Length: 130
Image (cartoon, rainbow, N blue to C red; front, side, top):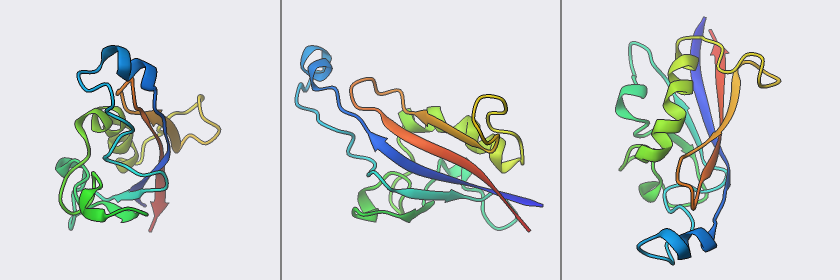
């Protein structure tokens, strides 16, 4: 059995009142690195090791410009997002249970980046294949 991991951007949130109160640029706006609906696929095998490249060039679907999406051909995942998703990606690439007992499907996890004024919500799923 082989394993790959699919990551999908489910949503982006924005808390302008927090940005106004705490950010150096109070009009920072929503996260510019991802778009709702972006999809990424991670492989870790003899040909590719997307994990150790922080998701560079894992983007498979976007409604934006791929060159400006983190995980596209020009930049790896944002460090705040990577810190939140990498442990689940690594576990899935090894064939492990991502979140047994918490999610309906143990091969899935919903998580978000740690940017408190503009978090991005990700769905992570281990995909088994031959």
